[in-house]
Amino acid sequence: MTVLYHYTLVFHLPQILRSGYINVTESNISAGREHAGPDVVWLTAANTADRSGGWYTGSHVDKTAVRITVDVPEREVYRWTEWAPRHGCSARTMAALRRVKGGNSWRVVARRVQCEEWKEIVVSRGFKDGEVRKGVTRVDAFGRRLDFDVIG
Image (cartoon, rainbow, N blue to C red; front, side):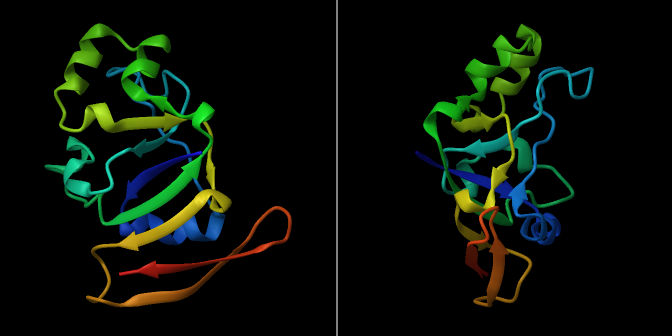
């Protein structure tokens, strides 16, 4: 198993909690065509947002406000910089994305990350300082209750 981190917006957290999974999204294989490659869940080896990559800077939304720690099977995790060329990412697109801070820490899994694989959810912005949202409960596919504290 491999411990990694998924960063997202506070806006996305309620849907993630309701659905019980982190959904796949665009893999950025092509700069000119959406969903040119398999959709993925983006993860990073960086446990702090300042090292998680340049994808959050200059945006009108804070893509680092929520950090979900996950533990996924190592055999399903790929370094994006190695995975993308095997799925048709051009040298030009790779060069552009390598210039973004944190690119070496990016990982992908080509499936949803289920709530059973979540270890912690930390909300750094969007709640009152120090507020802890308790009682987030999910039931997995086997009927087991999974409780999470969302720390703000």
